[in-house]
Amino acid sequence: MKVKQLILALVAATAIGAQAADIKYVDGVAAIADNDVITQRNLQAAIARSVKPKGMSDTDHRKEVLTQLINQSLVAQAGKRRNIVAEDAEIDSVIAQTAASRKISVEKLYATSGLSRDALRQNVADSIIANKVQKQVAAENARVSDAEVNAAIADAQAKGQALPEGEAIRQYRAQHILVKAGQNDPTAETAIRQIWQQARSGKNFDQLARQYSQDSSAAAGGDLGWFTDGQMVPEFENAVHQLKPGQVSPPVRSQFGWHIVKLNEVREAGTPEERTHMAVRRALEQQKAQTATYKLLQDLHKNAYIDIRVQ
Image 1 (spheres, rainbow, N blue to C red):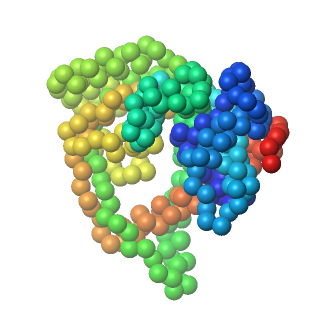
Image 2 (image 1 turned 60 degrees about the vertical axis):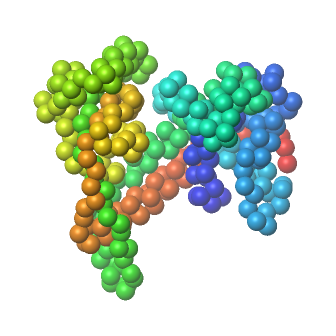
């Protein structure tokens, strides 16, 4: 199977599967993926949301979508074994975004999903977990050294291949407050939300960081200096991308704990050489991430019980 097809299952944030415990809501089973059940109802819903490639038969399209659902299920189960969770706020956000994209209310989405409220939330949670696993695997395996970038550039030049010009490098200057947290640590979440409320009410962010942050940047008011995409953990980076200068993010969970981020400035920078280096680095990172994701799925399939019951 093509890498692109395998990876596709990991980024479908609203794909709907069903847990074995919720099988009473369905008419039939499409497939079993280890401890999860993918129902025919969910398969049909996923097919309806999917765009069939031109020239592909309905049968092949159904098989492709089912494969994507199986892959997502296996990755979500792997995420749970890694103690990766989907926070309620994350589930709410995905559901709200999905409802908004369909121009309906959240309650309307729940009512028309074909699943119980709890089942729908669990399925969204699984898709969030699968996406987190993909990002974690990429972060663990997609690091590219300066030596690798230089070698790739030298190789391309030796072969007479054109190098990407790259875009202007976007740099961010931000502050943050970190409250360290273990897995399922309600005390840390409560603390960060109380700090966030103070920040929202206008209290000086520098003072809050100095008083509460458990990061080494606390003494500097949480100032992280200038950084570019790829230098921070994905959850932190995604929060920054949602902000305009002067705005403060809601609490964000990462492997380090709970963060509140304040974006101060954004600028475009980089010489032509630096832009080329960045473009090559990102291409190499993407290659490594795809290879790591493909290997993860191969390993999961190798060790999983899979029973496909529809053709």
